[in-house]
Length: 197
Image (cartoon, rainbow, N blue to C red; front, side):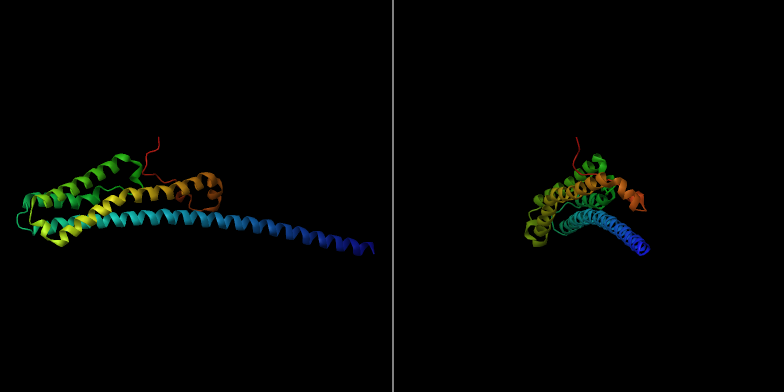
């Protein structure tokens, strides 16, 4: 009888130990899955915000190029001024910051200054030529360019907001992430548009 009791006790203990380990492993696995999922979601949010901002900026540059082309077709426009302006527009994308270089605020200032100059000069060419106002496409392009330019700050704020969430998550979970993620080089903190004092 005692032998049967010992066998029963041993079997029950083994089952309890196995169940306990399984529950612990399951909890750890769920926690790991959630961390990976959060990490990927935060990265996706940053990428999505950046792409929206660049799409808007690309469209603004394309519209500036189109505006210059349209102004060149209007009688009374300055050919030399518009040719110079066309070159400046074409140069914009080559001096634009990217997701890695926004840590250098001088690059952002340089790009913003160049963009503002092109917009100002294009509007000046529009104002100087009384014939330009007659064309609906020119008026529409100026409106769209201004709207996109007014949206720059909103896009940058949204991007910074996504980066703040991600960077905070990485700081809090860096050690755990390093053990989970094989490509540790991808666990980086992103730079912000706003200046950190």
